[in-house]
Length: 201
Ligand SMILES: Nc1nc2c(ncn2[C@@H]2O[C@H](COP(=O)(O)OP(=O)(O)OP(=O)(O)O)[C@@H](O)[C@H]2O)c(=O)[nH]1
Ligand SMILES: [Zn+2]
Image (cartoon, rainbow, N blue to C red; front, side):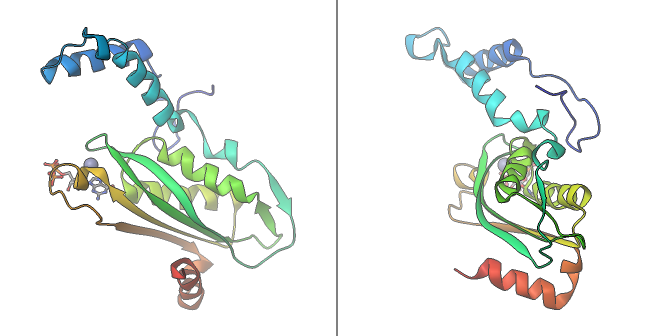
């Protein structure tokens, strides 16, 4: 495991303390009026702690680690991967928000291209953290710009937030769309072409 990194990837914020997470879940069960020592719940604090280790694994990953493979294909037109599954956690309520991300870029002049799966891995690095959808979207776009040095990037994320579905306002089906556009993709014609490809079903 690499060093833990902060939300902006700039420095350490701490380490995953499984014992502490387990104790906290036990306390939470007591706080809601449950008996953490009853048969069905005895193993739950440990399970939840291990689940959080997995759900927040992105806190210990850097985007540079997944964007390692690059090819020089000389392809200088847009590359777009659509409908990449997003499973993240809302940092306000610690419940899931789920949906899809569409990630596209126009390669650098020397045609530096990454593997298609690496774009999906990049989404996971930032999704597996306590997040808000806006920051998830800009982190994907900014890390692609920084590491791949493409001429442009577009990232569109569409998610349903369980904090709006299972509690609070209770509006199942409401979708939030966020976008981040960088470089040449800010040009209206190029951006419109990308958006029409993204929105085509
Ligand atoms: N902008 C943004 N807001 C989010 C995201 N996830 C959750 N939220 C919102 O964060 C807000 C938190 O509002 P608060 O008033 O502090 O919390 P709350 O009382 O639980 O709010 P309600 O959800 O309206 O009941 C809510 O409006 C959520 O819908 C996100 O990814 N981006
Ligand atoms: Zn929420």
